[in-house]
Image (cartoon, rainbow, N blue to C red):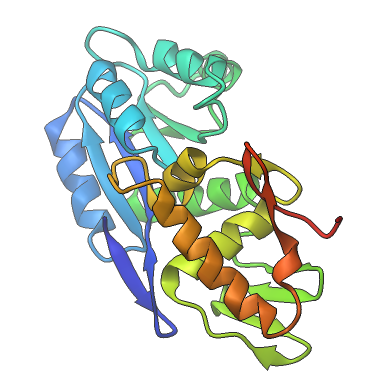
Length: 239
């Protein structure tokens, strides 16, 4: 998994999947993404894309309108109709600049629309804007139960004191704080925090939960990470 180093912590990069049958555009994308904060994945058609999405869920999809076989519009509709993939943001890439075509793309579930030819700089700005729109917590400061998490600096504090976490515990806490009050089982946490293509024992989640609680216990906050018997874990300020 691609990672980048930020403020003393290795963090997994946001995964962006481009579904595009034109090699020249994919090559241009690879050059544009080379030094970005995103990890680029490639698929030549909708069939290959569906396999990759199931294997390693992307954080955003760049989807060409005209694809061999299943069109980009049809793939977008399928993804948005599937509860497991409906929240993955999609940016449509197409040479169709007509207003009616833009409306069709957005009606099929696309979150944004970029007309070819486009500049890599414009596309990067669109990607960042869409990710911020679907996940408003990106780069923002979160505060729940007295825990303050600054995702821009990757610092976690309680009453002005900085907590020291390993990278996995930080990612677990960030996920919990951006999805409070919801119960997630071990398999779901592995998929959302570690990534769908990481093959490790589900009990590994328990180990990192214990480590997270141990740090929080130093400030009497371990009760926020709750075990829901027979279901999984929940981050909640309610007992």
